[in-house]
Image (cartoon, rainbow, N blue to C red; front, top):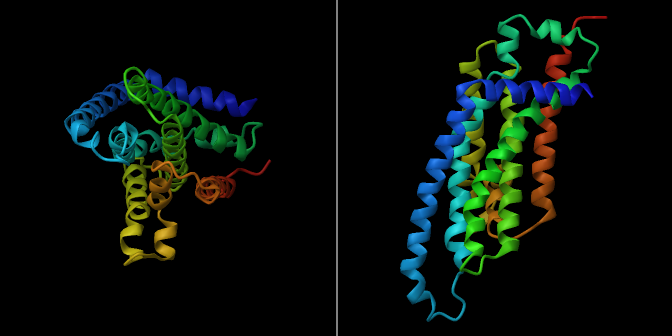
Amino acid sequence: MMMMTIAAKELRALFLSPMAWAILAVVQGIVAYFFLIFLENFLQLQPHLATLPDAPGISSIVVAPLFATVSVVLLLIVPLLTMRLVSEERRNKTLTLLMSAPVSISEIVIGKFTGIMIFLLLLLALISLMPLSLLFGSSLDVGMFLTGLLALTLLLASFTAVGLYVSTLTTQPTVAAVGTFGILLLLWILDLAGTTGDTPTLLAYLSIMTHYQNLLQGIFSSSDVIYYLLFILVFLVLSIRRLDAERLPH
């Protein structure tokens, strides 16, 4: 399929550049640092927690904060990965050639999206080895871990969809990166402006972090998953429509 060919091309281009390797190394280093901090905090609290009847476990004190930290780190990283997806092809005059090929716009967009997601899933797989190591010698809540991993995957897919769309709007990768970060940051902090007392409002519901926090706490809700799937679909459709408007007539 052409879609997988495009995905493989994007993935290969990533690994041929030093940026992908640098991202893998830097993110692993940052996450490992915070993992050790959260683990040390748990070990210090453990004697006190043993006296409490319903004390939070290692999943609540180590895994959930770790995944929350990972989301912040990747909020900064994903725009760097998506900024060149379309904007650089337009700047290098290769976008017209790609769109004149016998491949649909949908395959181009989904292929590029898939290529970045494969890289991010590889990154998540490496990150998940840290909390999985807690299975040896502690009672890790596997359900909470898997729900958090699902939340992080959906969040990164949402970041990627936004980054891909913004990349279709400009010829400058730097502008695409800054624009993506700005949009994601706005969607991130909507819940701060959208919560009045204990009553969430529409702005809080639209915030990507409101749904992420729900899943991160081990509360699986189909409405949160549907929100992310619709969010991803909307930005992929916007990307398709944006490129379709530029396609040369056959």
